[in-house]
Length: 204
Picture 1 (tube, one colour):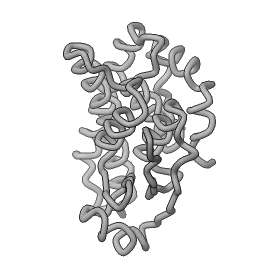
Picture 2 (cartoon, one colour):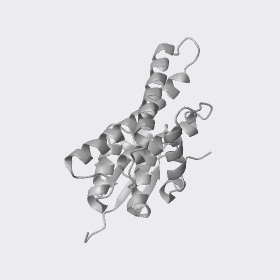
Picture 3 (cartoon, helix red, strand yellow):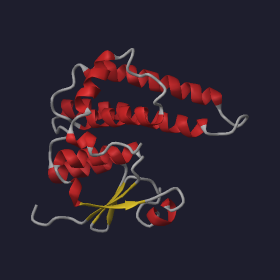
């Protein structure tokens, strides 16, 4: 590239979706090019709505143009600084992005389950919470079945899986996802030492 774009990342350190973007940027060697702007639940709408009507993170503003959501940001980063994370060949592309959907879907289910679980007694939708827990179990089983075939390349599907498992340790630490899934646990233990993982770990 002849010109380096100005990149502002709207973020919060506890967001697993933001972590996927940061892991990808670290893998591509461009994380230090972001200007990071923090948001909180109280400031997110006023801060982000001018760039992103959904007022959600992560949002990446590149030379005054907003890119969102996580998948779109990963595509853009890989187009600009790759390709390394997302294969261009049709079958490999479909496989990686299907895996990305599985990992990010695990985060979606966990995030919604956690938020609903914070409702007061009598207002908690326990049936929906149970269904979300079942979805998480199925997603973990699917990742366990896939982990043995993961390649050495740390592509978008693996980034999503790693971020999802880190999120489970962060928000659902009392639940043992590892015990019945030794293949997935061994894979995660192996990738957790990557610089892109250690530099983006959720706060305690």
